[in-house]
Length: 190
Image (cartoon, rainbow, N blue to C red):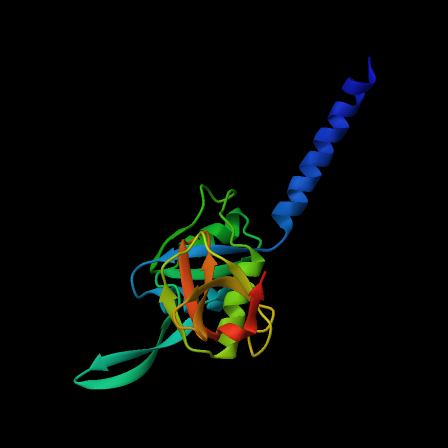
């Protein structure tokens, strides 16, 4: 028996242990909901004890000839779930009324949203800066904000005026983006 065959079972157990450790760490997952059911799905799953994030933004709405400022989901049709999703919790999640599906192939191969992307989205929501949906951008100059409430945040800058621009932050898994007005003098190349 040579050394390679003796080490093979050990490396398999290490790989299995590493996979189990990665699977056991909490991750963000995207839940796809029916139209206008984001809050319904969020409330049901929070009541069951799940950790959810439903980013909301203010938008002007015209009803009966009057303009009202209303709160709407930043990413219509999506809610984010944080945690370890085993088979039992997966089936509890999919029972929620208004849920279409959890993004991914199967219950044990769910797609994840990177912590950094949702961390930036959470900072935008917490800063209460005006934000608007924006077309998903893959290419463009990545910038970092150096001052203000969004300091150290990174995104893609789209210039619209000489001193003012739009900082676009994207969630790659959803192929959706959000834009925030920023002062172009506060940004540097990332």
